[in-house]
Amino acid sequence: MPLISTKEMFKKAYEGNYAIGAFNVNNMEIIQGIVEAAMEEKAPLILQVSSGARKYANPVYLRKMVEAAVEVSGLPICLHLDHGDSFELCKSCIDGGFTSVMIDGSSLSYEDNIALTKKVVEYAHDTTNHPYVTVEGELGTLAGIEDEVQHEVGSYTKPEEVIDFVTRTGVDSLAIAIGTSHGAYKFTADQCTRDENGVLVPPPLRFDILEAVSEKLPGFPIVLHGSSSVPQNFVQIINANGGKMPDAVGIPEAQLRKAASMSVCKINIDSDLRLACTAGIRKHFNEHPEHFDPRQYLGDARANIKEIVRHKLVNVLGCAGKADEILGK
Ligand SMILES: [Zn+2]
Image (cartoon, rainbow, N blue to C red):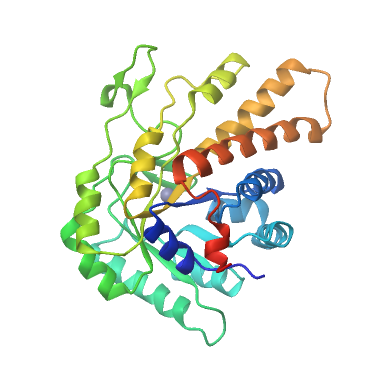
């Protein structure tokens, strides 16, 4: 079975009120942790690669490892480019076997964003030389840092623009800004309140914007970036084992679950995997200072990634058990 695009995944996710997890991958252990969890939960997957990941791991290694994941798991898996910033990068990924790309023109003017996105869509949808590749566009900008993507302040998506943008570009899905943010420090302390344990509680997502967008685009898949929840158990393990991550805070999972039950069909999760990985390695070294075999500490990192991904598939995304319906079984 080959890699698949997001088309059938999003159709089923929209109808079934769930979302597909889009997990960022950089190395073998991260891919294995995600895929092992998805196999046990029979869940579809989007494995996504940023331009930083391509530079770190080399696109051929990443593609071959994701192809191995398909072969080993038999699951419906999409290989997606996260935050493509140019036509050339998107084209290179499409030519290299990716089944979905994001073109992020959100830092450009509205008209330039449309022109760039449309150019990528025309290439991706032309099946002369490759299978149909789905394209994700973005309107509005998220605050925070993700690899090479950085914005100090975000701006919410304007619902009055979405019909025009989707119609003129032909995109298959749209990332919108409703208050999620990239990174492990999504909000400053003054943007939040604190709960009884002193943990920061971020401002709620703008569900009014999501609802307004969905009303204008019925049946159309929406994407949320910057949607890690920054699990405090991992932050505590990191801090208790020599780390220093004060006040790391993410999006409450109940809000992500609500979004997944609405028109949101893809939820991007990256920072939570990084935290799971780091917590596993820090704890391992603290408990076993004599160890030096990478399989020992990377094995713990992989086990933590599997645990957090399984939790997301079952309790947040709602896509556990959905692999077969996407494969048409
Ligand atoms: Zn993003």
